[in-house]
Amino acid sequence: MNHQTPRSHSPDTVLISTAAIRRRIARLAAEIAKTYDPTRELVIVAIWHGSFMFMADLLRQLHRQGIRTHVDFMTLASYGAGTRSSGRITMLQAPALPVKNQLVLLVDDILDTGRTLIRAIRWLRQRGAKNVKICVLLDKPARHKVKVRADYVGFKIPNVFVVGYGLDHDKHYRELPYIAKLRQR
Ligand code: 5GP
Ligand code: MG
Image 1 (tube, rainbow, N blue to C red):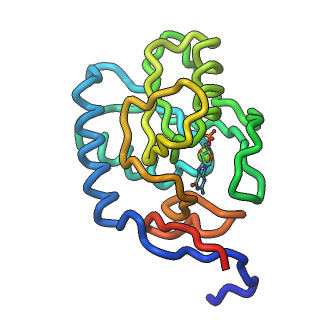
Image 2 (image 1 turned 30 degrees about the vertical axis):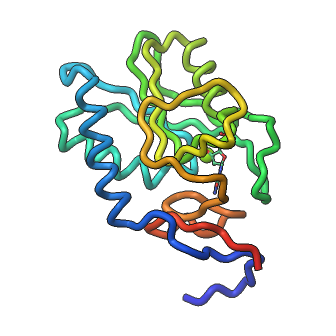
Image 3 (image 1 turned 135 degrees about the vertical axis):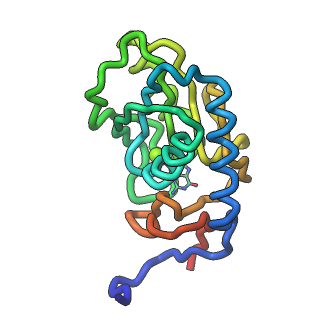
């Protein structure tokens, strides 16, 4: 199907290839598996929507590592139609799974300013989650604004706006199987 709507931006160079993502996620899952007790279920809370593709691939690799999981989502919004965060984080949908006394792995697409993850961690801790760890596919260290550190990072990237592999620009490009830099026309 051709895209009927003209887009003001288009994905430019591939920053991280499909093969590189696949290899890195397999290694990430192995790293994660080393730190968790396989007799306990790990509660995975993924931040919707950007993390859905990463989450799906990570879960399958965790399964290969013998890790059993319970999965839920939370929807936090900080971005509108642009490429800049508003700084305000709104909880649109909280996870339904009980998190009290659980080991929780928070999964997100990208750690940018860190405000989204801080908000998510605070929410989980307030509800009694213990040992909340963070796993992100991408990290932009140059953009951090608050004190938050990811325990597991797929790739550190420079300060560029990226799309693909679940990440969108104004609802477009989530379906790309790789990470690309966005170019303005
Ligand atoms: P933070 O709260 O850390 O500033 O922003 C986190 C959220 O902003 C991410 O989960 C992601 O949805 C969005 N975001 C940050 N940087 C980018 C980017 O380069 N590309 C896209 N598509 N989204 C981004
Ligand atoms: Mg996000």
